[in-house]
Image (cartoon, rainbow, N blue to C red):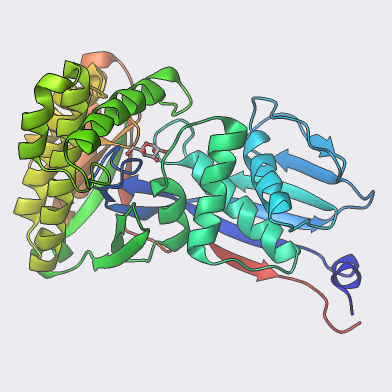
Length: 387
Ligand code: GLA
């Protein structure tokens, strides 16, 4: 029986993709560095079913408007939410995977513009749904790369690979140490030793963050300019993932000061991720927390991607009972902080942090107590197979 026949008898396929929070290693994922994200229990759902009229239909519970596109349509993005699933569809089509006509319905609860990768979550859920609906499979790495290309080329957002990879490959109870140069990764348990008694608390400053907005691209260009100088000075250095602080100091006079600062953040953050993985194996939340605080100082002073409200949340958190460490997470310029907190204190920690923030800025922050969940998966596949 052909896939088309199968699908005409199908009801629907539902795929789920989580959100992610990054524990350490920020902006390191587009210069061959290390990142340490985990998937968190917020979800995008992508439900796909055959369409009656031979066209593609896109709708979402989260945004207004629906879109209908002919299967032959290749028009550019519209600058709204539909660019994410359509960007993914274009990438599939370029690989020769042309899904039968479908109705794609997106839903979920990932906070938008909070730096928790709502975009990557939509991309990965859509990709998995469209692939399954087409009777095709791709490995986790290929799905992540395909979704990143959709975002780079169709949404025109210059993001790295961390979000799509974490959302695809994450494992419950673990963080994912990703080497972004070659996409090898290790799954690190979050429950060794004293870490078992901690929890990740995410605090949403409610100040919107957007990777597509200019500052991310500006930082990226400043960083890449510094990387180019280092490569020139120290062949065969491949990227900042290889570079040392000594090399950077030697090349400092040859690059703009901003590039120097950006590179210093990246090289030191790569070092912190390495140390953090040792702290995880040792089950040492104190060491891990110190690295988070140092990471924040580096984001604030060297990468300069923090904002006043986020600095306040980090400083306040660090002084609260049970908190081992805190930092800005994600692209920056707003969004969320990530906090490592003794589990017995996590609820009161969240309450006190929100109170202090509201008192200072009049903004009601949101806090999320998170344990690491699995990456994207197919929830159900109600295809009739026997007619
Ligand atoms: C955003 C991007 C990621 C990464 C982070 C910063 O989330 O999508 O690729 O660069 O910012 O670490």
